Amino acid sequence: MFARRSTSLAALALALACAKPGPPAATPPASAPVALKQLPDTARFASEINAFARADSASPPPHGAVLFVGSSSIRFWDTLAADFPGLAVINRGFGGSRMDDLLRYADRIVFPYAPKTIVLYEGDNDIAEGRTPARVAGDVADFLSRVRTRLPATRVIVLSIKPSPVRWNLVDRMREANALIERVVEHDTAARYVDVFTPMLGANGRPRPELFRDDSLHMTRAGYELWRGILDPVVRGGR
Image (cartoon, rainbow, N blue to C red; front, side, top):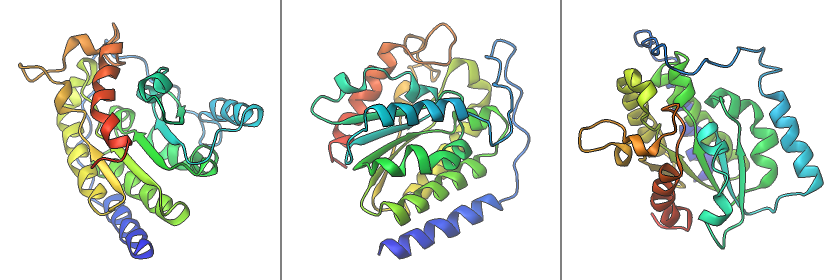
C-alpha cells in the first residue's frame, strides 16, 4: 500500500510541476517586508541548518517526536512544549523558507529525527515570491512522496497557507494553492490537511487584526492560541 501511495504522490507532483503556469503574482504592497536576498541554492539558509546540526549534536532530539517544520510561522512558535504538554516536540522552522528549501534540507532536518508526526507549514513565502499554486502543491506532493518512502508510518499534518493583512493582495492565489494542497493530501491516507485560513478571518471576511503583529504578517500569541486549539486534537491522533 505504501509503495503504491508513494508512486501516486510522485506522479501527482510531476503533473503539478508540469502544469501551465498561472498569471504572474500581484506585486506585494510597499509596506510588505523586504524579501530575503536570493542566495545560491547551496548557500540559502545554510547557517540556520548548520545551527540545527550543532544543536542536535549537543542534545540529540528523541525519535518518535512531533516535528514542526516550515517557515517563520513555525520558527516563531517558541511555546510549542507548553502548548502541547505531554508530547515530545521539535521545532525546525527557518524563517523565509519555501517548500523547495524544505525539500533541499529534508535529509538534515526531517528524516534523521524519525518523527511520529510531522506538522508542516510552507507556501506563504512561495506565493509571495511569485511561485504558482500548482508549483507549491507539486512540492508538497514531492515531500509527501519522500516521507512515504523514508518514513512510511509517519503521519503528516499539512497546514493551509494562512491569510495575512500585508499579503491580502495575493489571497486568490493563496486560496487556489490551498485547494490544490488539500487535493494532494487526499492522496495520502496517512496525511491530514488542516485549514487555518478560514478561522483566521473575521466577520468581514478579512484577516483578524488581533492575530497579527505590527508587521501584519507574523502572528501574535492570540494567533498561536488559535492554531494550538485547532491542532491539538489532530496532533494527538484525532482525525
